[in-house]
Amino acid sequence: MSELPSPPSRRRRTYPKLLIAAASAALLAAASMTLAGVAHAEANRTITSNTTGTHNGFFFSYWKDSGNVTMTLGAAGQYSVQFSGINNTVVGKGWNPGSSHTVNYSGTFSPGGNGYLALYGWTTNPLIEYYVVENFGSYNPSTGATRLGSVTTDGSTYDIYRTLRVNQPSIIGNATFYQYWSVRQQHRTGGTITTANHFNAWAGLGLNLGTHNYQILATEGYQSSGSSNITVSEGTGPQPSATASSPRPSASPNPSTSPGGGNGTCRVTQSVSPWNTGLTDNITITNTGSTPTNGWSLRFTLASGQTITSGWSATYAPTSGQVTATNVNYNAVIPPGGSTTIGFQANHSGNAAAPSGFSLNGTACS
Image 1: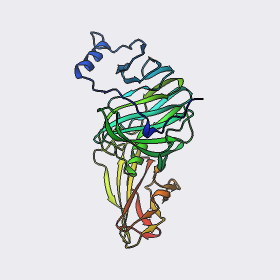
Image 2: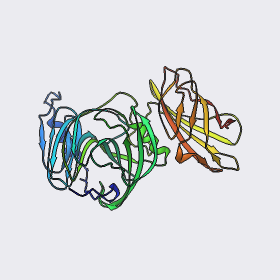
Image 3: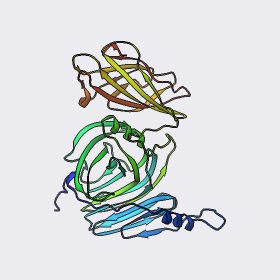
Image 4: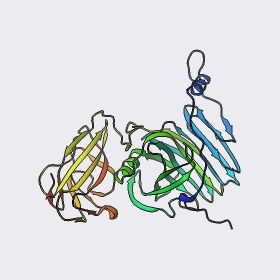
């Protein structure tokens, strides 16, 4: 029987440096065009050694440290991979730079042991390696990590973790950096990933991202064998924000920021980012009193035609009309002068106005 792998914070991997010269990008683009400027699909391509590039309009990354890994690049965002006898491998198709894409994907995932299927990427300033884990094999990648909270979106709850990598290989060379994790409780191999919901949930916990580098729908294997056949595409929904330190979807250049209204021992500020059929709202609750708030419920009223579809750092009920957001375990206590940030995503039917009438534990907030 093989030994269990070390926790992620102790696993050493070397990642390829993804510095693609503009001249190379131009050559790749030219190779996919006719003289008349009409794009043609590239033929399938088989990869067996470490490299990155573009194929049929998608960025791809192939990396392994040892073993047998065969990746075949297909039409549009499709790829397949078979691996055996490896120590660690990460391959996939996606975008460079990444962002708060709404991601659709489908296919098959067959880990013969320890493997992950995840939306995977990097940012710089700060340097962050992140995973939205959709499925995994015999080993939970969050093992040994401290759970910080959760976000409920796209039909499941994802547990949120952070791990620290000390002087380990990264896209800028050896460095010390954090890994952010959202790990889906109900595994799946296909569906929609509303990436902005994870980015917002992380930001609400103080886990901010930086300037985006690459982002792929990745198959990862560690000391195992397995295979996958995945097709990834960009879905409809929020427009991406590729460079914000705490990205959120927005098609509006001027997201509204407004107070909650009223007087008392709490203050509420919020930042609403709308697009044509939806919005997100990040709400910061500040305790302006002299004693700690130990357990809280924040009540507010949604504008007509709005319905909450997902939320982070609180539970929300009902999803329309007068809503109550209730604390979760990690943010139940707000000390005097302290604050906590929660948020939600909602659909709307043309009215993207901010919520109003905030009260905390029955006391109106300013």
